[in-house]
Structures are given as structure tokens and as C-alpha cells.
Image (cartoon, rainbow, N blue to C red):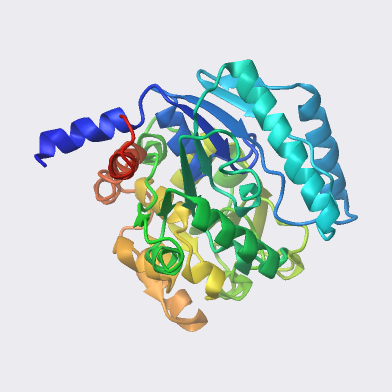
Length: 400
């Protein structure tokens, strides 16, 4: 097939279609799923089904608030949050251990999605699952095509029932007409169950994050006043974050600041971080403000513990740091190595040493450094996805 024919195939594969998307809650930070669906919504209609969860809720303030938030959004019905993107917040019974309850949730979720599809006039949609929890309903909605888009090793999360999630995922993999993965290790693992598994790595919102290199971008006041150098991290503070590396970096630079932007998960103890006098926990910030915070960074950090979860991860923040023109120090993870633009640390001592190397060599945002990631845009990644979907549809004899 000629290159021009391939491009035409890719364009036609995902144009004028109805997509039912099972993913994280829409109102969170824009993760890879949001970037992909925003691009696809230019030529397709999207019904985004908020998460029904991978775990049973706990009796803590965070989970109770989340339940009430979900109840509130459910009463709003299907809402159009952006052109061609409609969000459904389904209700589910929050007791996952019972097979009886799981069966009730399956029927309840299916009915709610079918009702929303009817309301929107969806017919023969493509269902696009980013979460194993959709397995009980994927393929039961009159779909033309089923996609499982796997961006994490979900069974390795510490707050889930790993065996149950693995069972759901295997069921979804067997049902999927195509599995898309974001990391090579994920591709290898999922291809054992579904041979129609492909690799499409994450992209980056380059035009957004490169603003860190622009003189007109304002540095927010709460970071502008902190002592330099500023060594920064943004993202969730969860049990996979290497707090030891952050603390060692802070202690190696008592004259400077280690800044953490993002919330701490309810099951993660961050008291050791908060005890350090020059670690500043600034909390979650709007996505729109991240380039301003990145502009204040001298070095960006990607300190993840090495585990089955992180070995399968493709951390989105690495490409966002790089698009901000920042030098990056990271734990030794396969997908970060593949990027090839970061300093890789083999242990805590080496992590601190690599930070020092960055501080000694052009710290802070640099436009030339940012340009190295320019071609890894989300639009380019979605073109790859279109190609794989088109090839799979053609292999199944489906009309494009």
C-alpha cells in the first residue's frame, strides 16, 4: 500500500463515528485519554463514561466526598462538556466483593449507557475502554468494534484487588478487536492474550508546555518567592513516588527549594516530605498554570520507585517537562530510557548527583531543549492510532 493510501485509510478509519469511551472521570487533570479524545472529537462524537472505579470505596473523607460528587453529577444526566464530547456519570453499587452486586452493577451500567446512547442517537459505536472495569459491558452495546487502550498495569496498583482486576482485564483483552498499549512492556504482556496488540506511546501538549520558555509567561507568586535553585516535581504523590530521592535532593541543596505540585493520595503518608524545611508542598494547580510553574523550575524530577507498576508505565510528565525545555532527572524506567533526553539515576545517591549535573549545565527552561520533543505531539500519536484502527477494521472486512 502506498503512503498516500495509508494516510487516507487512517483518516477514514476514525471520521464521523460514535465513540463510547470508558475512562477516568472527565473533571480530573487532562491525562492521555483526554488529549486523545479531544483530537478525535473534531471529527467524531464521544460519549465519555466516567469511571465506575477499580476498587471498593473506603470509609474516609476522600471517598465519601467522591461518592457524593458522583451522585451530584449523576443527577445532571448526560452533559456536553465540549463540542462533540458528552459525559455520563453512571451510578454503581459500591460493594465490589459480592458477585451478586457485580452482576447488578453490570446490568445497571449497561442500561445507563444504552439510555445515553439512545438520547444521543448513537448507533453501532466503537467502544473504547481505558479501564478493565468496563469488561462486563464492553461488547454488549451493539458495537461495531471494541478497543482496549491500556496505559497502566492496573492489577499492580496497591489499592485494588489485583486478582479481580487481572480477571476483568483478561476478559476485556479476549473481547477486544484491538488492544493499544502505551509502553513496550505492556505490549509484550497484553499480546500474550490478544495478538492484535499494538504500541502507541504517549504524546505531549507541546504548544501548552513550551510557554515555559516564553518571556510573556508569568511565574506564579507562591513559587516565585522561593529560594533558588528550584528543583520541581508535578503529579500525584502516591505510594509509587520515591520520597527518599526527593528528601535526599532537598538535603543536598539546603540553600534551594524542592517544590512538589500536586495532591497526595489518601493512602500515602507524606509526613516525611512535609518535615523537610526546604520541601514546599504547593498542592494541586490548574493545568493552565503548569507552564508558569515549570518556568520557575531549574531541574524537573521523575522519582518513581522501580516496581511492576512503574516498569509498565510511560510517565506523561516526562514529556511535559521536556516540552517545557527543562533538564530532567529520572528513576531508571524503560519508557523514560526510550525518550533518550533525560538523565537516568540508578539509586538515590546517583539521583542527587544527576541533579547536580543538571544544575551545572544550563538549568531552567531552554527553547532549544524543548524543540527536541516537538515531533511527539498528541496529533501525531492520534494519527498512529487512526492507522491501527483502520488496519484492524479492514482486516475484519468492516467498511471505512
